[in-house]
Length: 477
Image (cartoon, rainbow, N blue to C red):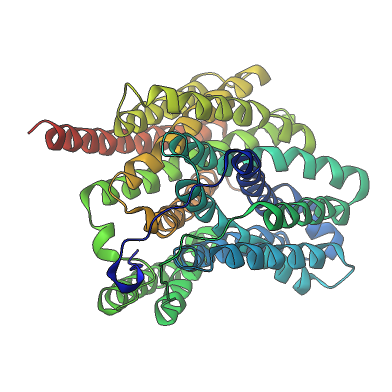
C-alpha cells in the first residue's frame, strides 16, 4: 500500500458526472455480485462434478479450493495494479480472464481444464477491492462510504445468490449448464465494465512486487491446502503440522521481502497501524466464525433423516436456506451507512459480531425444525452484512484515497484465509464427532462446533471494542 504520486504531487480524484454516476454504481454492484457468485459455484457442484467427471470427491473439492486460492493470490496483485494509472485496463483484463475461464468450465474438456477454468474464475475475486477504489475516487465524498459498504456486503451475499441457482441448473441440465450461468453473467459484467469504468486519476504510479507475489502464493497454497485436506490432519498429523510450519515460515519471509522492497505488494508498515491491524484480526477471527456457521447449517440441512437428525434436503432446496442470509445481509448493508452517523464503525463491528454469536447460540439451542435453520441463517446474514459494511470504514479512515484498492485487498486476503479455516475447523470438529463405522457425525458434534464459533465471535467482539476504545481516546484526548 505504498503507491506514490508522480513528482511528489498528491493525486486528486475526478468525480464522474451525475448521469455517469447513475450508471457507475449499478455496474460496481453487478461486477462485485458476479465475481462473488461465480467463485462460489464450486460449492453446490462438488458432488455433481465428482459424478460427471468420474473423480473422487476430494479431487472435486479442488473446484472450490483452486478458485479461493487464485482469488487470494490475485487480490493483492490486482490491488496494487488498481492503485496505479491503469486501473480500467486491469479491470477489463481481469474480467476477460474470468470470461475465458468460464468458457473452459462449459466446454466438453477433461477435468484438468475445468480446474484451470475455475482458477481463472477465482481471479475475479480480486476485483472487489478495485470496485471500492473506483467508488472512492469517482463518487462524491458524501456518497462513496455508503457505496463502498454495500460493495463489501454484496461480495458476501453473492454466494447466497449463486448457490441455489447453480444447484437448480445442475439438477435440470447437469454441471455444464450450471457453469453456463457463470459464462453468461461474466460476459455481461465485462460489457458493463467496458461501458462504465472510468480511468484512474492521473499522477499515480504502481509496480508489482513479483518476488513478494510468488512467496505469498506459495504460502497461501499451503494454507488453503491444509484447510481443505481434513483427512491429512486426522491421519498424518505430523505431516500436516510440518507443512503448517513451512507456511508460517513463508509468510515471515514474505513480510521481510515486503519490508525491504521499495514497491511492496502490501505495505506491511501500514498494516501494522493499530486500526488496520485490529480490523484485519477481527476480520480473520470473525471470518472463521462466520463461515463455520454457514457450513454447519448447510451441512445439517442436507444430512438424511437416517442419521437421527437433519432434513435430507437436496442441493437445490438446501441452497434456498441461504435466501434469508442474502436478504437480511443486504438489509443490514443498506442500514449500516445510516447507523454509522451515530455509531462508530468499530462499535458496529462489535455489535455485528454479537449478532453472529447469537446465530450460533440459536443454532446450538434449536435446530429440530427447518424454520430454526432459516432463522439462524437470517441472523447470520444480518450480522455478516453489518460486519462487512462497517469493515471498510475502519480501514479507510486511516488510508490515503490512492491506496484504497491495495488496503482493502489485503483485508480480503485475510477474509479468504479466515473463511477457509472456518470451513476446515468445522470439518475437523464434525469428523472428530463421527463414531467408528458411521457416515455422519453425532448431533452433539454440531453443538460443539457452535460453541467454538461463539468463542470466535467473542474474540472478534473484544477486538472490535478495543478498536473503538482506541478511536475514542484519539478523538477525545
